[in-house]
Length: 361
Image (cartoon, rainbow, N blue to C red; front, side, top):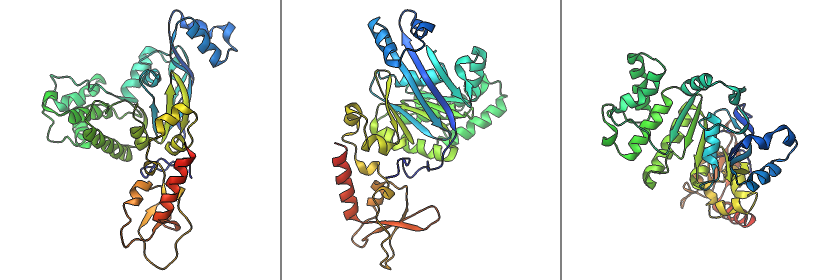
């Protein structure tokens, strides 16, 4: 299978420049955590630092975290409560000060930035959405969305015009003068998303933004999120504890446990090649049809002269399976140039799902 395909919504086959990268990133809570990185421990391994900190009763919120987020990619950090995923997100934006390490945004090390410089970066380059909507109850929808632009010093007419565009983008046009208490939970989250996008951020940080919503609304918000990403092409770091949400949204998934990175890979890699029992337990019940793409299981083109439905190479099996009916014996798979490069039958799908399912257990 092709390891760099996350679904029908994006094309990750071409290498992309890293927009954000972090290396040797640590956040330790305890007495004088800097001592674990003193000159005498310069050659210490990550595990030796972990052992020393734990022996002292310190808490390792994140340890030796390293990854790159490609430009315009959705990078999902996931794990159980206490795994360190939210701490990593906050370290990237320096809402939490890292104990040690390096965080680069367009090559600039944010850990060297002055407080004033960080304020400027957050105001102009970063958008943030959290589980708590954080709307100002005394402001209308339009004024809530315009609020960060006010902090930038933008004139009222310009910020209201920009805010109106964002309200329309998230599908809330007509509710500009409503107050937060007059909105549903999903509508309130849309306001939060619009507000974070109003500053036209280069990177977008989202910390479990949909976890407080009912399941149906949550699915709708995921659809909305993917629609916005297709339109805006933001570089996104998205935190969740839900493996199905991660698989649906991510180009790349980073799984964490006890503050440490356990595995980083594409959704198919995570599901089909789990690095250990922890990841295997996360993914064991994941429906493979939601992860595998048609080009992972297709056979040579079925040249019978019969016209078949045609799908792209990166369509998920889940979507392709819906195209079969009593009159459809096969589905043709076409590349970006429209050339038929393979075909898919129901028997191939059944065999592939069974074989892959056996291999990952």
